[in-house]
Image (cartoon, rainbow, N blue to C red; front, side, top):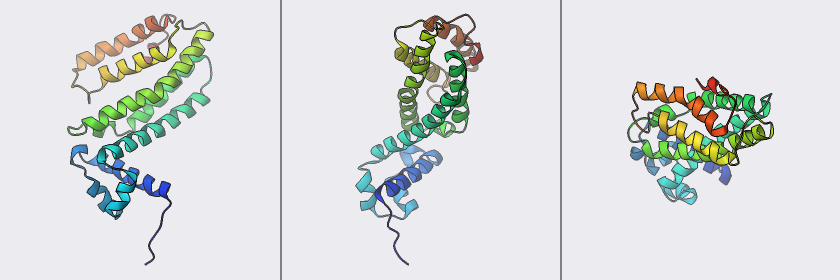
Length: 202
């Protein structure tokens, strides 16, 4: 049987995809590069040509996941109609739908903390500029008032992610409810937005 020779970017993509599946179904700490090699039936030299360590492979997996989600959010943003506030709502809706289909549930399992934390941080860095663009648009439309749209976006996303993610801390139901109820008002105050502008978050 003839040996299949793949182009470098295809081989790298296969390795990242295989690792992503393994990281989602097993604890990250228990996955080895040998597991990835076995799944793809490739030699040690092949995987080490692209990734020097499991840590480096993890970075590639996280970047791939975040980029896929970001692409869907960018499409939702381009298709959204109305003013900046309406477009932010469309972006939030798109992000929540994507999240429901993501691997976050798997990452809540013990042993996956490293990948979980990296995924949240990478998502924050990629998504914040999208929200910042809409916040800046909102300032130009007279809906918001801030000189720091990117920092506002980073602050809001990091607060929401950290304070509502059960993979970071086993928050109580009471904690989640009071924070969720407070977020709209806090965001309105931060952006100096009209009253009840962010009630859709509830």
